Image (cartoon, rainbow, N blue to C red; front, side, top):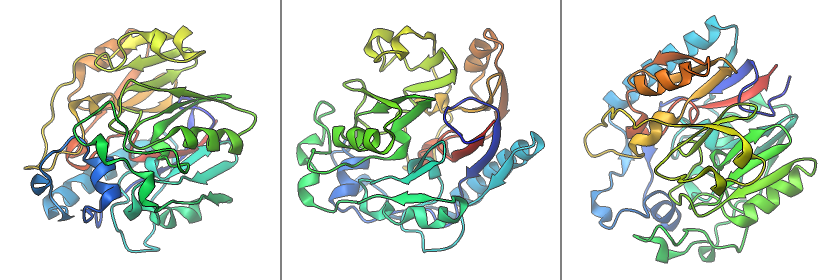
Length: 320
């Protein structure tokens, strides 16, 4: 019943909340992890997100929750255990679940180190890992240079959204939000699995706008980052794959832009034949239908504004 992959029938899920979402002050961790591609930091908005963004994002999350409940899925939400320093919108980043193991990951952004507190009561056993605040964990040379990663290797550091599960095989993206030491730590925590690193394809954060697992042996790839499936480690390079169509832009609020248009492929599987997709991505819907995968087309108006769509705003806790 516990989740060990991305596609088995969903039984229980945590869905995030936009309430209280804010962009923290730009300390070294925030500057280098989230904004390595921004030269002029004066253009970065700091402080609470506008009320309109919060209200509309929460409306869309409620629509998503209602859809999941109609599919007989138990839906859990973040609790108000601790003040929000960043946001509870993307729980996917915060806790990694594999079977009975739940790990509050050693996130590299300091403002997210306590994020797990608002969802910890939804887990029977939650391992809380060491979160480094050492300055030598960060590499200032990454600013403006996608070939230079933001994290050094002095300590394990990663977001759970750097990871995709395929039962005993796990794909881990080495990027600005996850280092090699993080992959080694994850392998130590899950000795019966095979943690495979994906390197050199995308530096600017999480894996779920680069690769998506649809079912056993079938994945979706971002052609702007994965030029050839041979770039993936085994066994994933031998899977069948779908090339994600060019995304339909959905816009963002003012100067708040926290993801690329490729957030379009940030889908979430309810079961091997049903996924949730942002409502404007009709080209992706047509591609998936060729593989007998139906799409629930739902709104997620602030996916780019807040930096997360349906996969990001969830943690699938139980799958059958």
